[in-house]
Image 1 (cartoon, rainbow, N blue to C red):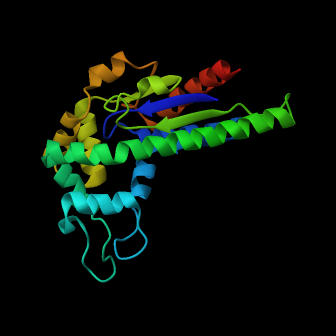
Image 2 (cartoon, rainbow, N blue to C red):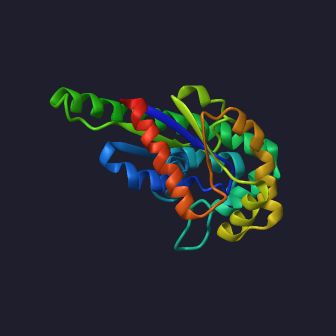
Length: 225
């Protein structure tokens, strides 16, 4: 099992790259794990219905103001309010990260273990024709959580900062000020590039991006062989 940690700053296009990897690599046994999806699932549900312990802990940390009070959404987390809150306060951001990060990584490695068992079963069933198993793990805060050495390779999706801001404000309908706060809270671009094993430049067209992913996937397949 070859594990590739994929990271990059906000607006760099991590989700788009993951989607292309998925499309191109499905027949080769490529799997995708998304840390953001795991984190969202941890905070899903409602305080008035089924909910995780993580959601209850967020309530205990930050209070009821972050939760919906309307009849249709009562007790659900207002994610936009949470986002604004943590990027306005380093203390609150750290509290949330200390709560969520261990749970997210626990789930990531649980999924990797499942994929690994699947690969071993395939090998035992058909040693000649089992698929090449590669796992792409999208982790936006890979370096911030000091987890880069837990994976076989680190892939950085890179774009200039101004392009990050442009794409993020258009996509999320956020203010430039908030996006700049988020960028400043993340590790700097040069540090990501310095510690990357592989880099994809996502400042061009979708066609150019797809070609880069295709080349890199072929490289990862050669490593797995």
